[in-house]
Image (cartoon, rainbow, N blue to C red):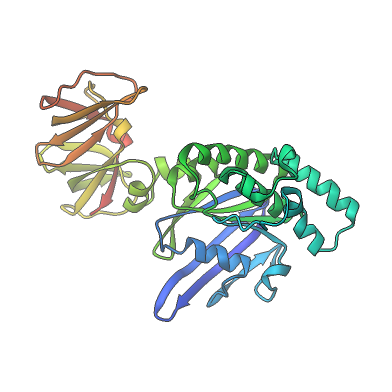
Length: 356
């Protein structure tokens, strides 16, 4: 990974007695696609606005190439910005909208023409150059906004929930376009979303926010397969949490007792838990199997509902203690009748233990 290109240092932002962002520190190498992910009100957009200069942090610093940006007004930071609302000029054509930031910067006419054509080609809008925004679809308007933000070659592009107003199919199409544009331009992108699938699809790394702090930062694989906390495990992907009692931990592998009395060994745990401490066992739906081996843990369940999803079956099951499980066996299309009693299996090594 390259040395830090953009550095966020101990950013804190308060609004009266409310702490919106608390001690956020991130190092972002040049060319990275980093997504700020989290529920509404967790501080991700406020952090983005502090980088853009739209919010002055209460304390902390933002550095680009080791130089602080805090004293530089937003319009002089040379940072591109794409919002949820396209904010296109309705009386200007697509080409004129894209050229606008270049004209404001008094670039030579030949450069304006060249960059406008380059951005039209990059976003596949050549045939729409002379249209007004009102004649475009939502996805096309967002591509114009993206082209305009990239036209003057900003070193950083900030994107705040840019696709949330689009329908699912169009959102997925524009995600693919954003990935392609990122590969082709190499621009550093900071992207804000509350949609975990969008974050996993787009990002080199994800910073998962919770209550103004970063709960965990890493690749999508890190957050999904190696969640640091129960919040991360519950927010990224689908998860089942079973009540458990911690018995002992040896070399990072815990032995636990579930509420039905079954004892399971070999569960991954990062934090120190006391003997007898209440805990939560997290098992992903796709980790379950409808048949098992001696090395796997098993649970007696009652099948509540089944549904066919093409590449897999989804089963809702209830344990003997009354907890419902989401079971999605990937490789087996096992017959599971509603109301029937079954035993489902999982590998303890695929589960995680967190303090309750």
